[in-house]
Amino acid sequence: MPGRRPYVLLSCAMSIDGYIDDATDERLMLSNDSDLDRVDAVRAAADAILVGAVTVRRDDPRLLVRSPRHRERRAARGLPPSPVKVTVTGSGDLDPAARFFTVGDADKIVYCATAVLEKTRERLGHLAAVVDGGDPIDPHRVLADLAERGIGRLMVEGGASVHAQFLAAELADELHLVLAPFFVGDGRAPRFVGDGRFPWHPGRRARVVEVRQIDDVVLVRYALSPRCDAD
Image (cartoon, rainbow, N blue to C red; front, side, top):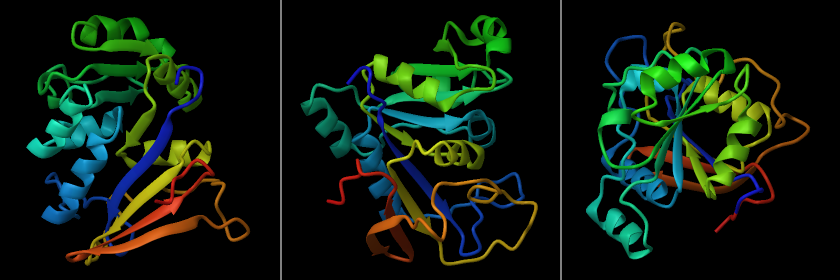
């Protein structure tokens, strides 16, 4: 509903020791086929999917709903096959050939820092809506604009700095955290959020609404706001 911020669901998979990737150039697979199908269903239920520019550059994600049955369910609701794609960038340095832009027919939105707005529009304006996100980029401003565009449910898939921003600003309603059954053990690798001041601490614990084993990984769902539907 325009004027009210979208429902924000954060999704992340990490190793036992809290890493979301390793330090190599190859993407580390933390999930499994069954959990990837679950993530696909969560994507299909969203109006938009957001990732940071680092994720676009490092992982080159497509951000599409993959399963035909999930796409058919969206079509039955009068929706396009995949949700709107959203990214945020402070520098505007995104490759127009990235799969974020070139794969799928979903609308694309790039929120960039004010200082690089014109440069980013020249580079990407023919591929996506390029919007002033503030300087530095303000997640409140991003969510307000998404609401005005009719986005009611936003899935945030990372990376670490984007998750940290939404968490620190208390703009997350729900967190899906998947634990992979191995260690990374390399301090050069990215972790699920770094240092920061977060609203959930020993005096204010997040509420666990589900713990589920999915083959060899474990999903923990946390309610981070009263808006979270535990069902």
